[in-house]
Image (cartoon, rainbow, N blue to C red; front, top):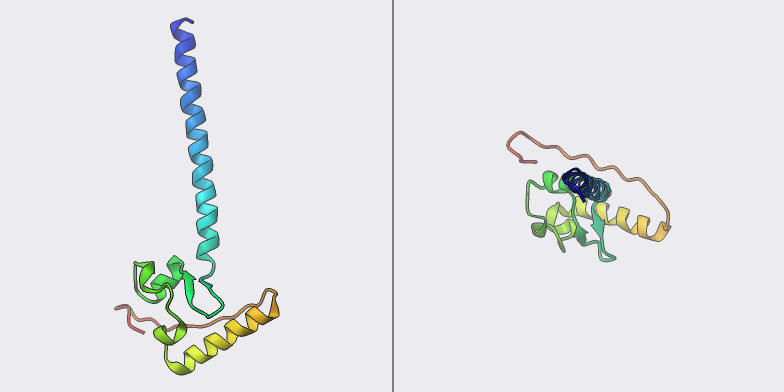
Length: 111
């Protein structure tokens, strides 16, 4: 094998590794986009996965501050009751439903 073939082999290997890395990054971004689309709850309406948007709403970087918490921990009792009623309707419907809740936020992060 001459030096030119060795260089071509190394370039091919580097190109292959770059393609694999790009594929992994795209797959990771798609997975993250899926997670970022909705927070996930267990059957007791406790958060098991929280996305960046949800962490932003509650002004925290650490997802562990929200995981296993429920709406009553995060909201007033009347709002929490509404959120959990929506959760129950969704779980019982066994089909896609859309719920929208609006939050007021101020520049300092308060609600």
